[in-house]
Image (cartoon, rainbow, N blue to C red; front, top):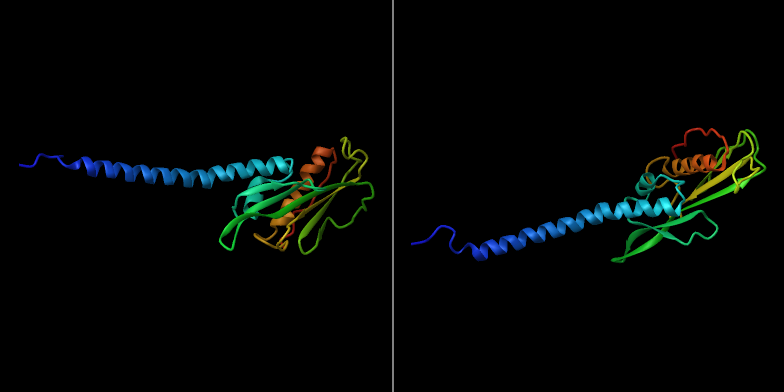
Length: 185
């Protein structure tokens, strides 16, 4: 006579192990997918001093993990995770410069393009008042991509990042400015 539930000890333990394995893998995937993004967003905010939108920059990075490199003369230099010949590594992909200027030309071009960068000139209504830009009549903000064309990603992505950084830098410097919408490349 067979008793209901008899012999299920091994099957139950194996099932429990399988369920725990699925939960562990799912948890790792969720951490990697969302915890890594959260960490990348924090890295972007800190490295670029809050001048760029982390969500927009993550989209520009293709949703990949983002890290910071030593910036040199830039505000920030970011790298993203790429796979090359089967190995993952971090490659520089985005940089940001902010340069106060005292020789802005009224009516000059707001957006200037090169193959790998977009420069936005934010002309101040009155000279800037902050310590780092006192007396500046404009801020020149350049967003660049290190290894790819400025037209990478969504149309207008790099010009949009440059424009947003220019507006945030101008506000921080006490430079009242108005910028047209970013062009779609």
